[in-house]
Image (tube, rainbow, N blue to C red; front, side, top):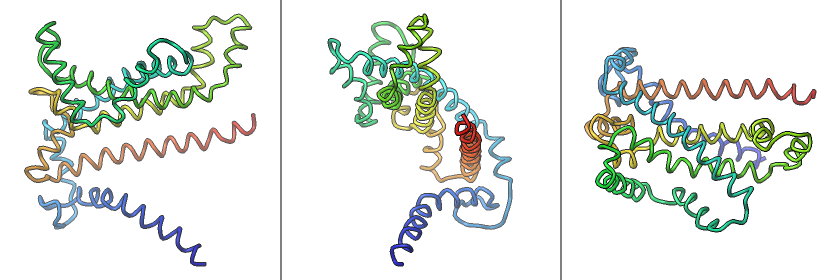
Length: 269
């Protein structure tokens, strides 16, 4: 009996520890007071203030652009790296290549940001590119470490891939390129989507690396929020965070509904 009560209590405490701060943030986004920790009444005025704040809106739009571009570049590079590591198990320099791909996973963000900053400064001095630091350098930096995460996700899927499906397609006359796009790509598509979403989230959440490689006029949303936190959080930041939480919740709900609807079809087939 005690064992039956322990698991629900432990789960409730764990979920409360994880989600209570998020719930309190959403609640205080409707606080009328300018003090984020003092409740003085229900109001939606901070959502209006948010849409009249060009700094926050500009930083949010810039972060979304950077995250989408970085995740897309990382998806291509990470998928190619995963294919090379799984399909070509023996080639010269494989150990070095595998270590270089996985290095960003264990490298501290401070070291990564500093090394990329020195790289961009050296490239600008020798090649004249990139000129200054801004959105381009942030995209390159984010794509660099996101590639490692995409590679791990896709590599785990390719390691369990049934090669007989590709062999059957090529026996029927399909070229290797068509086999990849018609057979391999649809099967590993869930891993590709997961890798892209993981890269998008990591890029959107990054603060340390972006602080090293950004320049004037290219402050991302985490950088702007961090600067506001140092001077005191304003309630419009809570409103922005609540909107992001709502979008993520709707995305998770939609994905769950789609998954539940496709399960009966798969069982019938």
